Amino acid sequence: MNERFSGQSRRRFLAGTVGGLLAAGTASRAEATTSPSGGSGSEAAAWARVPAIRRRIKPPRFPRRTFPITRYGAVGDGTVTCTDAFKQAIAACSAAGGGRVLVPPGTYLTGAVHLADNVELHLEAGATLTFSRDPADYLPVVHTRYEGVELMNYSPFIYALDRVNVAITGSGTIDGQADAEHWWDWSGDPPPSERPDKELLARMAEEGVPVEQRVFGAGHYLRPNLIQLYRCRNVLIEGVTVKDSPMWNIHPVLCTNVTIREVTVDSPHGPNNDGCDPESCVDVLIERCEFDTGDDCVAIKAGKNADGRRVNAPSMNVLVDSCVMRDGNGGVTIGSETTGGVRWVFAWDCTMSSARLERAVRVKTNPDRGGYVRDVYFRDITVGQAADAVIEVALNYENKHTGPYFPDVGGIHVRRLRAGRAPRAFNLIGNPDNPIKGVRVADSVFEEMAEADVVRDVTGFELRNVWVNGRRV
Image (tube, rainbow, N blue to C red; front, side, top):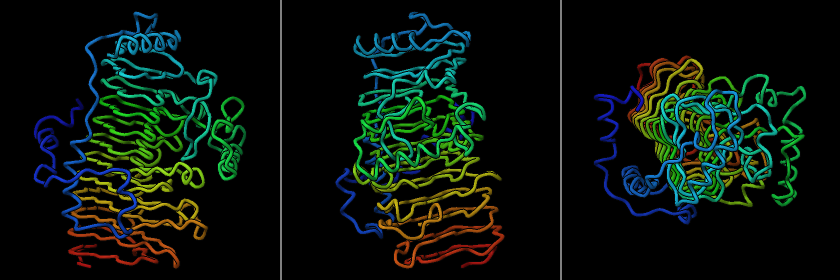
């Protein structure tokens, strides 16, 4: 348990801010097409959905069997490669019907770790997984997603595909060991560079090349994620610290019933080092986590462009409760991969502040992405300082103003947000042919805003009891 959740703060978090809300009916992927873009029902009725969503999100439970990796030859000296020991321990655990694969104190060097059904990977205090810097240790290629597009690529460092009941728990550290000379250097323009491969992958997706023929990996430069759980059901990530991923740190894709609790993401320096990016997932709880990242802290996604339309799977019923956001491009972000649609997002009791936190609340998409964003609710958000707008909704991401797939964005509600210092309160940019449809802010205070707001091509922009620089607006 992190120290910050002791005492009164711990009791407040456990009590929750939704305890007095009314029960709500169930939700499913089918709901994604039943409401217009402006949102549905009243704000109180929307928040009344939260208890039912939360009841459905249940962490998996595991048999009381323990499989220490040291039993299978792992040595925690930081130099002996333990990849095979992890593989054997996980296989034995799953074959026995499930249990805990135990990582005792020590530093364990490994390549890709693939989880199996009914396996909890548990890192004891003092345990560190350090991942090899050799790309060959993440081969053969696996079915994965790179920035919203499916392909065959280097394995994520911790990976599961089509699994049920998987967990990563404990108080140890998962260290991707990426730095300016390993993995992060692929993000730049001088060779080796990911740019040609990103362009090739985008062309393949647009042309409908089957996923199994989109083979990258060796000889290519598309960076893997640190943790990616793909098409899994009943997922738990709890207590661990993750750091220095090649790119996105925690990336559940097409998963159902996901709990991410009391996790620390300490990765402020790497390019695209998002904290947690649930993509095309249903029923997700992110609670009591800390994020210090090189990109968005939490980014809710749903596939990109042609491939997102092919898969056509939304993210729905995502709860972000009592988290702390420091460095990052956005505190709680939706997009830019919005093609499959994002709906029913709730964030509350979050604290965000850093001279390098660019925005607190952010929605980003463009006319190549398409899709929709609706029924998004924030309340009781504290922002100490931000480096750009406190609230941003931008439909021109990557400076793209026109295209064949205008996104449908609206029904965004913010209540009881208090911001200290930032350049501006609002940066809202729609399109003359495709306005933002509905941004409502109530009972909120923006204390020291240095510049004028940008509000362009927005319908239904409502401010109720909102104060900016000491004046009610």
